[in-house]
Image (tube, rainbow, N blue to C red; front, side, top):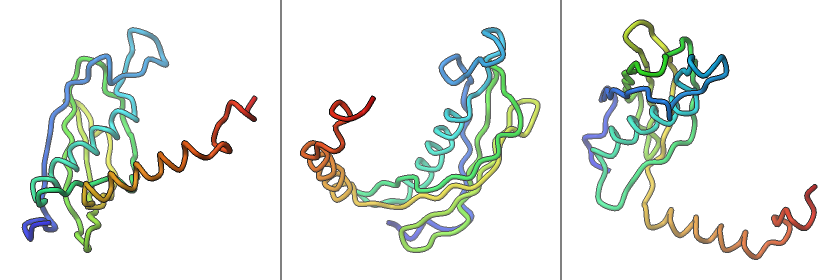
Length: 145
């Protein structure tokens, strides 16, 4: 991690709200930006900001999010997501975000990420996969209805 990763850094990205990012609970002609896709986009902007200040072999992973999704953004509109680093404490990075479309503030909240060594993280994931493959208690076909 470079010493340029500091409190106060910001990044804003614009996302077109296409059909893929929407949910149509109210009707097919009323698709709106779905909260899970909004959160995904917030993670992308946050990761992109942090990764500009990481060393080779490092990346960041999300560890917490607190989101208030306050207004609907219809399919076909755009949304701007602005993230701001509020604290860097060791490998933990806290951010605030605000999101708006052409009409409304649509979301706000906080997000935390942790900087990892990609090789170590990959080995931990592979180890867990190996453990899960050998654990018949996690095999739902044997005991789930």
